[in-house]
Amino acid sequence: MEYTYKQEFIRFMVNNGVLKFGEFTLKSGRLAPYFINTGNYKTGKQLAKLGDYYAACIHDNGLEAETLIGPAYKGIPLSVATAVAMYHNYDKELNYCFDRKEVKDHGEGGLFVGKQLVDGEKVIIIEDVMTSGKALREILPKLEAAAKVEVVGMIISVDRQEKALNSELSAVSEAKKEFGIDVYSVVTMDDIIAAIEDGIVDGKEHLAAMYKYRNTYGAK
Image (tube, rainbow, N blue to C red; front, side, top):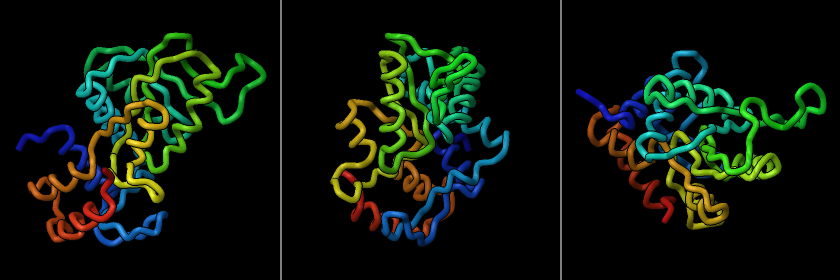
């Protein structure tokens, strides 16, 4: 069977112990039927495949940019892997850079490592997940201090499509409302549910709980 890149990614997460089904208490206190632990990515092979999936998301959504931004720390390897994949898979050579936690006051100095940003540059932010939008709130002031860049989008691995604790909107929708930035995900919770329904991954015994969770906490 030939899978779409979204279906492949869901299988990849399950096979690598990143996506698990069961009962999990989240930091929010909610009892969820699935859990995503990106900390289980730890090999070069996994990172190479992640780059492929992120690049496919950029390509699939028709995003055009000159530079990929990898917020420290998890965004750093992801942006590098994605830049490599964009070159190998789509023959597009993109710059990449990432922020320092503190401004370097010696050597070449500056807040960013890699491509030095310039006014008018189109950039894409690369992150693993979005829970509260914290990473976006931290990186945007740094970008504004460096140059007047145009953020054409942000790529994350999974959109839980889940409303925040104090809002009916999801973190992705909040980012659009607050910053005017479109956030694209490789897959969504709906994609994960569809993958179980279609037998792409095992877990049909968890579907009832997945439906209930989506009905209870799904964002508008």
